Image (cartoon, rainbow, N blue to C red; front, side, top):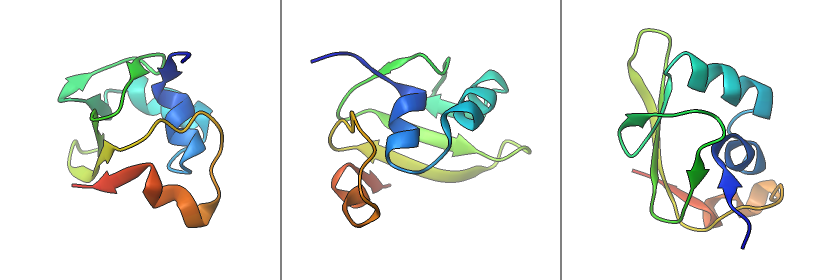
Length: 84
């Protein structure tokens, strides 16, 4: 399977547009497994993504259940991640 980029995954599950995800990672507002990462970071099932607001407060934390290699229908989003 091809590596899945963080920004692509967030776009595919409809959390962020890819360009917005890139800006958020550059400003340190998206963490993977507690680490600040680049938008190109490869992600895997079981990784935890934490999304912070501009004041560094956690606004969302999700665990990857399945890799979303293509945009998924809105009704199926929860098959790919869970809120933790």
